[in-house]
Length: 74
Image (tube, rainbow, N blue to C red; front, side, top):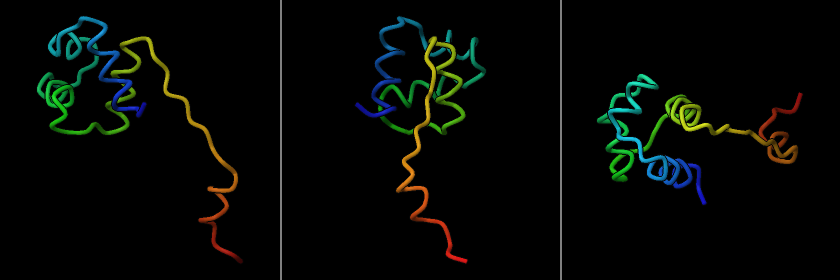
């Protein structure tokens, strides 16, 4: 399940309206509504605000092989 799918499910399962989430997070209700209807994606900062309001935590994971692949050789 992708981050977007997980977040959509959490919003729907919470039973909160887009307006209620707007009041909690400062994220415009129209942005939330369009996200829920899969009409747009969210910026990571916005996803973080919504996740926090829903009691979720975004966790990052690094894979050393991926991070070294993009480093420039000196």
